[in-house]
Length: 84
Image 1 (cartoon, helix red, strand yellow):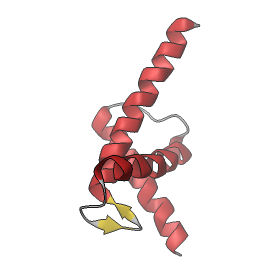
Image 2 (cartoon, rainbow, N blue to C red; image 1 turned 180 degrees about the vertical axis):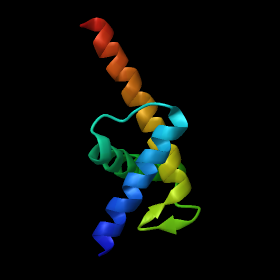
Image 3 (cartoon, rainbow, N blue to C red; image 1 turned 180 degrees about the horizontal axis):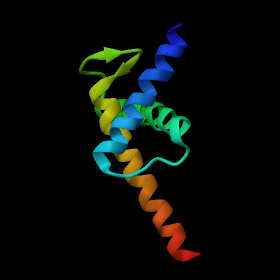
């Protein structure tokens, strides 16, 4: 059950990060979950463990990390489309 809860929270974090940046995450729901998980790892690595924890995610660092991840990914994708 905790794995399912982690998937849901990761998806919500990825979705919120997409809303905050105004950019779509490729892959739909799966992309949101991946962005939430990787963004959580990135945010925790950069900012540490603080803020409320839900489903194993420290919400504030996870959200900030997901926003950074989405901005970096959209920058790289745009650069690749211009180069092609």
